[in-house]
Length: 147
Image 1 (tube, rainbow, N blue to C red):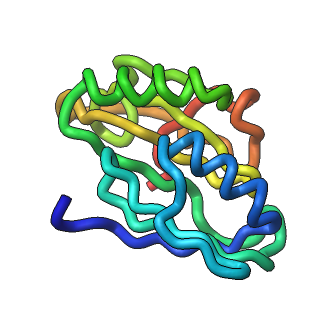
Image 2: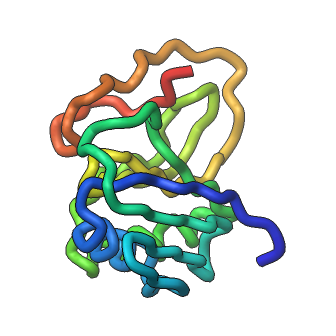
């Protein structure tokens, strides 16, 4: 993979977050230092760094996503994440963010929501309600982007 999006998150419990991201990303970290963990998963174009010391629920991230190139990739990653025991919210064939998508969502220990999705096609017109902010993953009714 030649290009990656870099994300650096300050987390409230580094050990808990490391465990979550190992399951979600399907691989262990490539670097571990005191107070720091870095992931470079093979399947996603992300360079994810975690640093300890953040407060739970702090920050301004609404959600983070990984757009994949095919629906079978969404399905394969969904099966892998479910097998790892993480709670997921599945949304197949949903109209969201002015497009039809197949996706699933997971939530890290600090409440950051991640979506893995494939954009099936753009929509010419759409009326959708924004995803409720601050609602726990299992209770959220919608999941469209808020922009």
